[in-house]
Image (cartoon, rainbow over all chains, first blue to last red):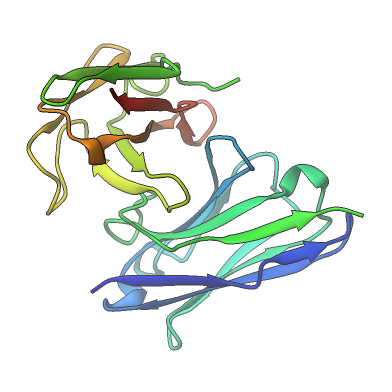
Length: 122
Length: 110
């Protein structure tokens, strides 16, 4: 069974950093792209970014609002993906979801974790 | 304001059908395939339809997707109480170079 579990969320002050982790099991992690999505309280879904599999170059893409502040990485040996968030803003407050794509380059959230809440507030 | 336009709500009685629309443009729905997600209250989203009309394993055939030009639709037939949820359309946007979502449609089973 495909499982994705996010961790690392919490309360952080504006301007500070936080790193989210996503641990995967039940599939060959290195063969798939990982996307991060977020959902602000009471709002809809937004894509944050993705990292392709090594076969597709391990490249990253980000939504404009987080480019230069957020970094997605992966450790295929441990079946982990990470979302490093720097210079956090109040508008980054959201539940962050880790997802697996259909293949090594797919952005589609074919499987989702349960999410982790990040609250940016002073 | 979302790039894709969905009605905020839809409703029907058990056994009825509902259709949710998703309107976009030539840079998204007009040139890429659409996904639909279902989100129950307090839960993570779940992929319902991908590649315009494909159902992942386990999704009942009561759910069907279609698209035409720059619009897509999700049809739910034989409404059941467990269909009460928020539904989101999503598609890659070539101009924004990333996927975009509709604001979501809340389906209520009366």
